[in-house]
Length: 380
Image 1 (cartoon, rainbow, N blue to C red):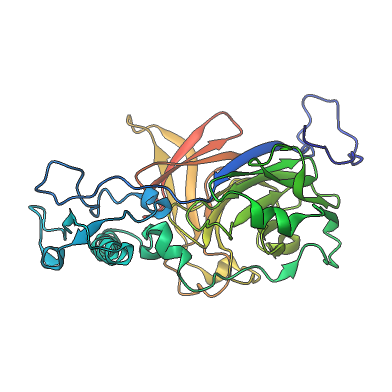
Image 2 (tube, rainbow, N blue to C red):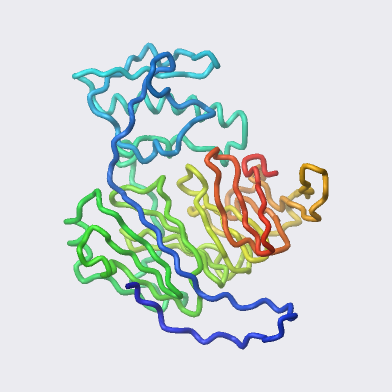
């Protein structure tokens, strides 16, 4: 059983059913699991063979980012520059007894590079799948040290965090656990808990954090950047704050601090498909904002941006009386600070985000029981 945080007194709620005053947001309970161990990959062959084809610009798979490189495969360098019938680069991977995993990684990166270039030419390069996130898991583990948040959650002097509790044998448990075991992350009320499901006592938390006067509403785990020693988690709160948390280092960074960009609650949050840094947050005022976890926040002035409104209509041409207003575009020249993009999608709160498998569309569920389908690459 997950231990709930102590109750926080809530303001008085109007009992008038016709009242237009917004009701206070109460805490939610969400539970996520992730396996950071390596996985075997399916066979990869050339387009001319009977097996699965190499990834192309239209069918590039984000699942490749969580695969371990296959063993005993030889790379034919002459095939790396070949073109299939659609003009896309292809790579031929053939079995051999004297090959290494690094050779496979190199060939796969070449194939993915040409696919990523094609995607960048046909859409928004900032929101298309980056090459680094489609590399095999073995290559990402050998990559340079990942950037981590700055502040320690155990020695934090911030009033945003009330207290933190860690397992007494945390370092020993992490060192002795199986790499194929599952981690779990849960938000309950004003607290979050990091659990190790590989141990018999699954209810014993590794880390538990209690936040001050802020309801923990949503979180998401980045499965693209996750390794056996690094996991990125973003959290959304009722106070509009966003936390980027890395549990292995026990450090965090605070984004949209005190509502510097948007002062309404974060009702849902999701990592952008295939991205190490970018994530999307749905705010209570109907705005969708894309943030970069590694960038600092800055006071946003809409007057400095050139946005345009777009009317959403159905197939019969009937106007829904709703505009998608691009307040800040991903094509903006100012991309040195957050936000990366701001879209005003609805006059109602947006309760949920769901990305499509085509790495281009996102569905947004609104509080008035309607939903929107957005092409986030072309921002329309």
